[in-house]
Structure formats: C-alpha cells, structure tokens
Image (cartoon, rainbow over the protein chains, first blue to last red):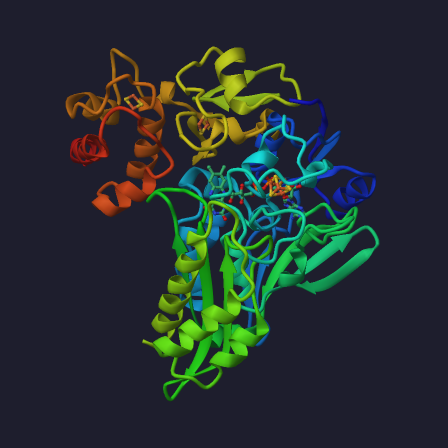
Length: 323
Length: 151
Ligand SMILES: Cc1cc2nc3c(=O)[nH]c(=O)nc-3n(C[C@H](O)[C@H](O)[C@H](O)COP(=O)(O)OP(=O)(O)OC[C@H]3O[C@@H](n4cnc5c(N)ncnc54)[C@H](O)[C@@H]3O)c2cc1C
Ligand code: SF4
Ligand code: FES
Ligand code: FES
C-alpha cells in the first residue's frame, strides 16, 4: 500500500479546503481502502468525511421531497421502515447490494462514486486504457461482465445498485466545493470514459457530493428494482433494472427505466420511456421498449447473454409495475 | 491511536495505511479475526465497531481511532465458550475453522439485536460470510441452536 497522510476534519469548510488542495475524499473506505491496498489508487492525502456534522442521515421536507446526506450509511436507508414506505425502490436496490458488513460502513456518496469492477482495472499490473494505457484489455479478453452498449474506449460497467434506482426517482445531487454549491441531475454524475476523459464521474477537482435529493413527484410513482446476480449472496449486478411509473386507470405515465450492469453509465434511453407512455405495460410494449433500450448493442466475445437477460428483466420489472 | 478493545483501553502505534485488522492481529495480539480475502468478500475479519458489524480489513486503522471494538476474543474462550461458539461445535459447523470467528461475530451480533431470528433473517445476516468447507445448512442449524440456548 502506498503512503498517504490522513485527516478527519469536523467542519465541511475544512474538508473542502483540503479537497481543493488536491486531497482525496474518504467515506466508509469499503472501496477506496482496497484500491489503495492494491496500488490502483495512490492518494497522497486522504480527507475522512465521516466526522463532518450534517452530511449524515435523511429527512423529508413536506412538498420538497427527500434529502439524503451523502455520508449516510447504506444500512440506514435499507433498514428504515419509514423510508421503505416512501421510497420502496431504494430498499429493494440495497437489499442485495454488497453484504451487511459493507452496508454498515459504506455510504450513499461512496456507493455512487465507487470505481468500476473491471478485473483488468483492479489488477495493478495491467496498464489498461482507463489507467492511462493505450488499449482496453476487455475488448479481446475476458469480457463476461463488461458492457454491451454505450461504451467508447472503455467497456467497464457502472457497478452501483443505488444509482439506477435513484435515477429512476429523478434524483438530483448537491455538489459542494470551496467555491460554492451547485445542483445537478444524478444521471449527469456518470460519464462514459471517452477521449481525454479517462474517468467515470463528472465531479470537478475539489468537489464532493453533499446530498442526494428526490423530488416530491417521484414519491407518487410506483417503482421496482430487479437484479440478476451470479450467486445468491452478495455480488454485483450482471444486469439490473430500475423502473418507475405512475399508473392511472391501467395506463402508465412518467415512465422511467434505467439499466445497471450493461453500460459504463446507468443506461437510460428517452425514446424507450416515451414509447411506454400511455400503454398498459403489456408484454409487447415492454419488450418493444427493451429493444429500444438495447438498440445498437454490440456485445463483446463473452457477454452476449446480457442482452437477452436485460430484455427479459425489463419486461418483468415493467410488468410488475402494472400489476 | 487509542481504541477500546474488548472493554480495555489500548494504544497502538499505527502506520497511516494499515487496516484495523492488521492493528488487531499484529499490534494488539488478537489473532482471532482472520485475514483471508482482504477485500470485503469473505467476512472472516468481522468485528464490531461501536456495536456495528464491519469487515476490519476495509477499515483504515486511523479511522477507528477513539472507537470501541469487539473481536471474537471478547465473546468467549476455549474454557468459557460463547453460546454461539458452543452451538457451532455441537452442530458440526466447524471444519477447518478458518471462517468460524467471522461467523460467530456476525451471528452474535444478530442474536443481540434479534434473539429469535427466522431462517431468512439468519441467512440475510450471514450473507457477508463465506465458508468453503461445511454446508450452510449446518451453520444455519448452529445459529438456530444458539438462539435456543440464549433465549
Ligand atoms: C465485496 C463487495 C461487494 C459489493 N457489492 C456491491 C453490490 O452488489 N452493489 C453495489 O452497489 N455496490 C457493491 N459494493 C460496493 C460498495 O457498495 C461500495 O464499496 C460502497 O458503497 C462505497 O462506499 P464507501 O463510503 O465505503 O466509499 P469509499 O470507499 O470511502 O469511497 C469510494 C469512492 O468515492 C469517493 N467518495 C466517497 N464519498 C464521496 C463524496 N461524498 N463525495 C465525493 N467523493 C466521494 C472516494 O474518494 C472514493 O473514490 C460491494 C463492495 C464490496 C467490497
Ligand atoms: S474495460 Fe475499461 S477498465 Fe477494463 S480494461 Fe478496458 S479500459 Fe480498462
Ligand atoms: S478478510 Fe476481510 S472480508 Fe475477507
Ligand atoms: S470451516 Fe473451513 S471455511 Fe468454513
């Protein structure tokens, strides 16, 4: 493990000052500690965010939706009966995410900003494109878990279970830096690595995610999260689907469908959602939308099965909203 | 750094990059928590920090400063085993024994909060622990047994 200094400020302003100076944010450490141990991340300074007041916990403000502090442990969301009533999709997405031990420590912000799980990326000895090398080893290598759609130079998949679920709830994030605050759509936090941009997230130098906000309107929609895994206990999604919609007289409105595990970002296609507006979410409509979502998919050697799986999972998720 | 480990205040010199697991095993002489995958996958390094079940291999030692840590050593010893440890032996849920401390800590944490768990709740609570030898059937059985002993 490389050497680094460690600080745990109490004040957000102090953390932001350190981040501005080039330090790396540490939340629960369940991803970062492993990356550092394996030499994939080499931070010189770590700023532990867990001591900062006010970034932990969630609340509901009437008419303003839900605000979730970025340092809230995943377990707090998963085990809250109150949140399960307001936003059941969040609990569904977390129930099979990681392990109880990791959910106790891992945070919302850390889950959204965790690095990808491509095995070439995680192997210190492989100088792949995302790490500054010249080529992606997955393209002609072991590609069982890689992307089937939306990839450019890098074929990793976005690993977070929480991200598709929250995006299906129209979530926004509050981003803070020593220069001020800004709001952005959660979906815009995720970027497919491409060209000069050899990274997965759109945060700028010195920024951190302070909170996630779910607007009131999303609480009125029905939502569901389905996840295909290789084993029953913890494992990352091979494919996952977050779907939500308002159902009026048997017809779907405001439909959202977001896929995990198939693309470098949580995968959403506006045309597929539009196509579902006003339908009864019958099999034909669901499968047609799935085809639109996966239109242009170009699987690698080992992962064509993901297209079939995603298609069926989309159908099931949308059908369950109707039922 | 200072910790309260198994009820006793301890001090240790740590390097910034060490994990809590390394500190427990190598600096504080508590080898009960095992070191296997070192990436959160197997649960054999499970301990309680401020009462919460965590993988000590993923906790930076510096981040545990000032916290209360309980390891498997606090639960029982060879002479005075914890009910969960007894149940594991009686149910035949121990073969090589490598995973056992992690399971015991996780199961003890479960029973502390939920003395009469259903099978589904046991499975859920132990989902972060892996055993390469025995079937999960015997482990489930052990936790059921332990629940009976403790209630
Ligand atoms: C065995 C295992 C299985 C797993 N399975 C799943 C799974 O099935 N589904 C799933 O979704 N996840 C899974 N995970 C990932 C897990 O959920 C993440 O490791 C965890 O959520 C990260 O949170 P953390 O607080 O520990 O982040 P850290 O490790 O502390 O940080 C992760 C990254 O985010 C950055 N960061 C953290 N917080 C902020 C912030 N507020 N602002 C800006 N940057 C920040 C850090 O700099 C770092 O780069 C698994 C992990 C393991 C080890
Ligand atoms: S998929 Fe991305 S992270 Fe994996 S080898 Fe290719 S470039 Fe590297
Ligand atoms: S050694 Fe910590 S989880 Fe495996
Ligand atoms: S008894 Fe050997 S790993 Fe569980």
